[in-house]
Image 1 (cartoon, rainbow, N blue to C red):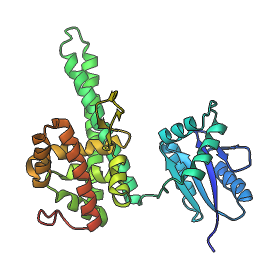
Image 2: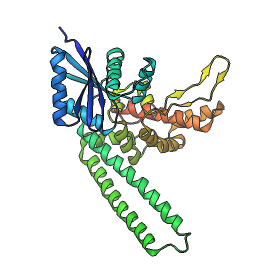
Image 3: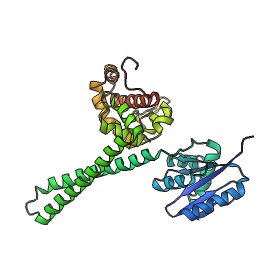
Image 4: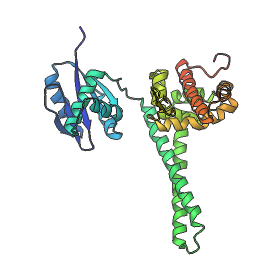
Length: 325
């Protein structure tokens, strides 16, 4: 006989955790190892040995760290939900008060009625790759900002030498750090057999080079392997958003953008290359233009096609084959 499910809503903060369970007042715990242990003990006290399903909002490192701590228990299922879903759910319930304890109760009502998808911990290699790639891209952004600042400074006649010297030193330091991180990424991708195979598979797609393949893997994580085509498209923020209602509302359609913008950005440049060198993407792009679609709409459709193509190749574990496609 299967166990019943005991639902828990958790509002995650930097220093506090508010947990809500059925027929009990929400309780606060410290967000540290001891506090997490106390929270689990309190939940198990009322769960009557039922299987636990804990739900929380996606709050970056705070919810992610908590989920990792909780995932070691096989009797605990975890869901990490987009905060926009919880906010919309609270509005649907006509909630007028917003406090940590009320938010925990809203999350409890959400998980018990909506049964959201379960979260799974990514392999250690993917987590490490994600952190390295995120840092590398952040460093590139900083270097670009400082290069722009340095370029602008050339037009200031009375700029102190110390400013120019400091700017060059900062750019040099950031560039050195970026070089080291990129070397670590390259080394990791070579040493890890699974990552190396997956990158080689993605690089077999015309338009996808090593740099883009690494970022698609790092930002896509396990969603590339576990989500359906529709879910993956929504996760990347590439799902269409239409604004049509009755005879008066005729809004301009666009992509939702309510998704992983880093994954979406990682697909942009490969798609630009693919519309020239990938026969399948090139054909789709041309067909959309022939139908009078705007170039950006056609490009977004190609990004979506490229993402689904990458998912299929990873799932089938076979390189790109034009005839098979």
